[in-house]
Image (cartoon, rainbow, N blue to C red; front, side):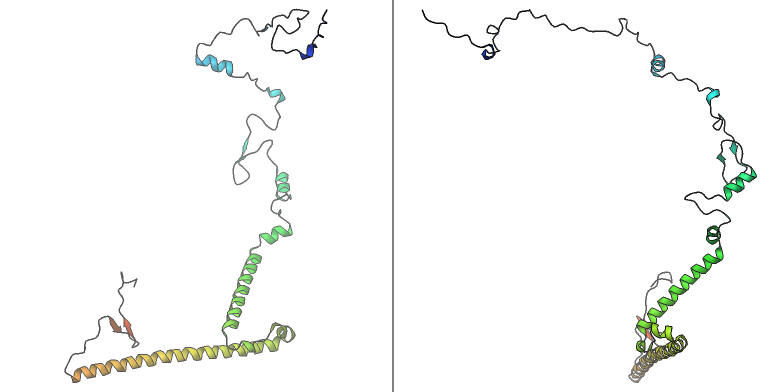
Length: 248
């Protein structure tokens, strides 16, 4: 007689087919969903918009006056008898002693109170004028000195700063002499430039007179160019059209 094959282990059986699964000892109960309602009765719908807003608005209780702080009353007095601007001040009005104490009290991140050195320094106009004018005069002198040193041909004769610290009086006299030489040199250049312009004007005048004389000898009339004119200084200039007598 042939022997039976060994039984297949349960964990090797497939799970897809129901027939191959082992039959459970206890039958499975059907899953049921248990729904729990908060209330069996439904709220009736409001009829108009006022009822909807009344239902959505939270209920608030008025704060009793028994627990209201005394410094924050219902109606705060408006104090306008002191101070430049009207402001709401809670509590009693400040007395003269309180105002004097607040006027001279040092508050953080604020200006210095009255009666201190910093308050006197910041509010003294004479000191501010002195500092401002001193700064402006110093800047003007520095600008003039730098311009003088850069333009004068006698820059090598100007004394140095060390000489001024050692011999201030002699250095000042030497600087004054160098400045006089510079002024004389500048005046000489201006005189030469002015004389050159005068000579040019005189030459142009002589040339014009010669042209007029040549035209008279030929029996012709000398007609000047209308585009140019001779000024009071004898300089021949081009006529420029002016707009409203202001712009050229």
